[in-house]
Picture 1: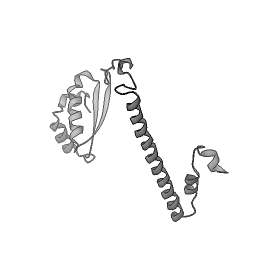
Picture 2 (picture 1 turned 45 degrees about the horizontal axis):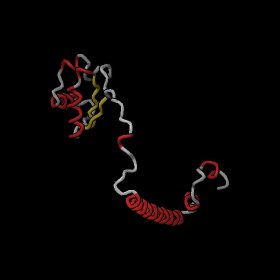
Picture 3 (picture 1 turned 60 degrees about the vertical axis):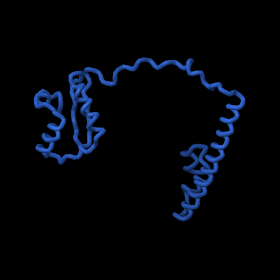
Picture 4 (picture 1 turned 90 degrees about the horizontal axis):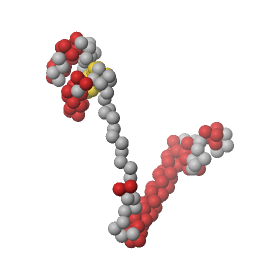
Length: 152
């Protein structure tokens, strides 16, 4: 840890990690990596065993009681709508994505409440205007939306 490693690394960096970072060859790096994986796995096993013991002790000492009273947790404030009337969206979508299709349909239904939507269909060849028109027709994108720049 003398030198650059000590000045740029967190103080919690383990000796195994330092040795692995500065291994002299791939075989040595692999040995340190495997030792680190074994150490971390053992730690996780021990942490989970303690958590199970903790949970069991809590159920035994305080049967039927919750650790946190949900009635005392503050209610979230009403969220403002994600989309405001002056927003213009940039929507990148794959042409072979059912979830993207469903989201695009929902956005187009809200077009009257937005400043506009700029669509970027990923998967179409650049400059392939007929493919873009066919794709737009699938979503019933109106020519007046495009000419009015509500949809680009």
